[in-house]
Length: 515
Image 1: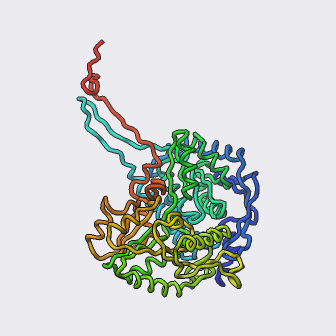
Image 2 (image 1 turned 90 degrees about the vertical axis):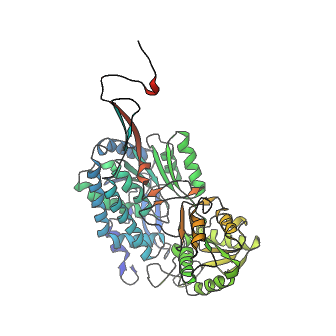
Image 3 (image 1 turned 180 degrees about the vertical axis):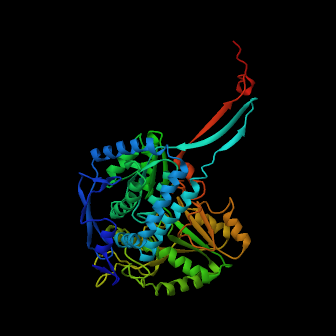
């Protein structure tokens, strides 16, 4: 089958090592899986792509034994040596960028450009990690005791469990693994059941690098399966860190299970992201930032723009320009680069989208741009929907919850403090933005009295993030941080060291203990 008249899906699958039927559990290049088989269907056209087997409890045990064994060896490699391996993986990704980007697009439903962009994120974090491998810095401290010195250092943590979501089926895994690998950790990945083939493709690309460098097989493992596999991981004391991306509901279950054994969890959960539009905003920037934020990836980004908080003096103007812009949106095959919006992930997501639109009207909102599911030629999968806009108030129950779909909520404000309170008045705290040319408004938004989100932007939208900064949110978004800055510290354990180079043994705080 040809995609966009130029890409043959069978050629793409072959290039990535995906067969018609695949073992869904991998320890390095060793593939197995004795659990139930699941089939991956594309939301683009509803067609079956391929199938794979899932992990049983016995399969999981086999993976964990191999990962634990691999860690004992991998942690002894120097950090720059580990960085060199990650550099090679980045190069291998560059060679497969077009094929992997197409698979991401076809299996998940995002545009081909976004699929390529997601693979580019993988490449970028590999580049970042290579540099970070030579900067795993501790610090030195002066001791209160004579002839003593103190310092802190970071050591590898162990087996890192990664639970990823369908909307970014490859990038988020790589954000974690690239840093975990240079930290000296090994990784066990439980991908989303809604985009499982992408995980096999990433592992196949990794295996070529691992083989060339004679890495222990368990350095990278994949365990496909349903929530029960995730439960095994979160309860496993051999996994000191579980990094989980998904819904707030899922994150709370992970956090409770990991906390019960006093493990660490790194959580990247829901977003309910807002943009504040002030009278000082440049509307030429507002409209494209809002439209992409609201409809990009069919509204299935955790950073998607959900709410627009607009000053009353420009409300009608912004509303009218947005509704006109929405008329220009082209919906269809995401591998056709002429289209702006592809499908939702599956028909269950469509049902949630339709339920949200009904709830808007039931709760007193007014739909400005009607939604609905598309049918007919090109929409056979039943997953294509129309982006919608509704006028609401921030306190409506449906507005307080994140709907993973292209629904944009508009609301008015009079004073900036009111707008900030509305922006902060949800349980999620991931991404936020203000559109203004007024430096006082911008700095107020960025101050301690401003946005309570992990990401706060000025004159750009909520959607997307750069590799160099730490990515994550506050409140029920989970508090985790991935990618740039000092996010690497989450994957290591910190140790304080005191060295006595003198001939006496003075005690701290001047305590005397003479015998």
